[in-house]
Length: 70
Image (cartoon, rainbow, N blue to C red; front, side, top):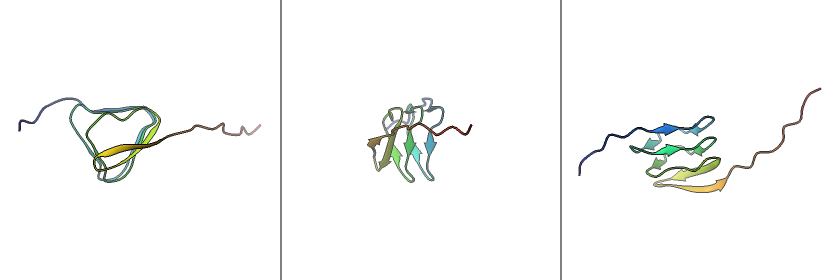
């Protein structure tokens, strides 16, 4: 086993829970949510919710319109 050095990329508005392991070279997409204590070994698509060990996509995040205060 030989460790690799590769950058980890975290997209804008992504949330990473407590005690999450993110492997080398992994990208967590924009707006993605990763649950606490997950092990992220593969890329997480944008706007999805992932959790587990290893992390798996559970569902897509659905953005709704926020009411405007006028």
